[in-house]
Length: 283
Image (cartoon, rainbow, N blue to C red; front, side, top):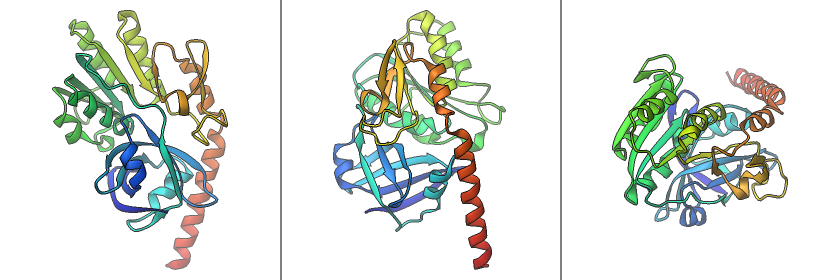
């Protein structure tokens, strides 16, 4: 059993939890993730390890309540337990000195970008960070990302904070200014990563993206997370989660991500109805 030692609300429907997982905390490296199951009959979901504290045996997870399982996870309190957590999984990010690196985090993807940005800064890279969200209330880890950045930009779709527009606008501006960019790391919604890869491709700027497809076992056995990269089939859980953004078949990935969308919506509505009825009975 894995105890939740701390819980915070970061933004609307975006929560942070710290979980006691001593073995995972000792082995975790930037870019890796865990697959967890809330209870014995629960669905298995992947979450990136945002941070780890080997001394205290803790890992930090950040998630957005987007479906039944994440909504259920969001209902857990400090002191509650998660039935099982498997990890660390996936290949660690390649952390080395590139030169000037642009880190782009979209929405909850900023949580995934944070450990990589931190590690890349530690080994001597100059880090330019761009984070974006639909509005200012959905921005997360602003202070943390700003602290480790040499340059820091915020964008919001509605203009409520920072640049009124998208993260791609700032990236385009940096490129148009002929800024030397040795690496772009983009993590967020698939459509955002696709757009960024499309911008950097003509300039041959190395671009890495972290993919988050449907995933079940996390060990390469089920094949649920398969994607096409450079005309080859890859399994994100064991071959990724990071890939060359210029080689990813994003259209196929988007199609596969939507396969169970209707079922996910139905499951969430039934769960919310069940929770509402239980609360009504307790009132």
